[in-house]
Image (cartoon, rainbow, N blue to C red; front, top):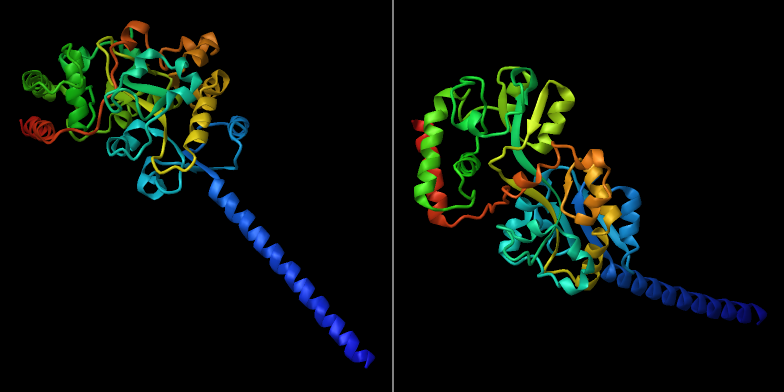
Length: 357
């Protein structure tokens, strides 16, 4: 009889324990699900922000932050992140299509009190009209690589590459017809974003005339050629230039006085984010002056944040490979990769004509 009582007691105890375990599992399942629902996701270039600043950014909002990284542009396919990512940091041309298709959320600048730190030059944009969907963080531009021993002074004009035979056979251009036409437009004093056929025809004529003086026109790697001492002049971004100069101190870089094209690293909010308010606070935090300064120097880029610029070391602010002269900077433009059909057809046809001439 006592054995029956003991067995009965054990069964009751097992039922109680099973119930407690079940309740615990339900509790942790609910808690885990809740955490999953309120987690905050950010994706950005690898090593773009230092760990100490990432920690500061994580603390700027009151929900767990998951930060993912990509090391190559081609790894960022927004379609793969649209549903799961709140904030995206990327080069403007990587997310411009998503902005155009309104897959990025329109920003509420009342929640971004530090937006006033952004240099007014960047409030105008050809890829984000009215700057409704993005905030610029860092930037760089296209300029001229040159071999220092061939020039008494930096060749700060597109003339030597586009309108002169002085360095015939010792000049390399890029293989991107659209960008070359835009650079030619800047040289003749017109906006790189002009779609006026008369000006674009002039740019086409300029490139046709210069073609015979260009090494491997339409099929050259200017950076490789200048490193191999096969050319004296080439086109590159300042970001590329800094890497080249590390390899060969006899190579310099200059921003041309006629102006050129700039690109930007921007921050956006996915339209499908469930944490848009927190995303705005995250953007506001990243516009902190010290964080902005650290991002710029860590990547050897220029900052779009005026407050960050003010606290940069003088030696960094005055580095002509990173920051162009103020007057030249005003002549630099961003561009849109999205073209209307007629314009795209016109540019493609002109580039084919140049290559065939």
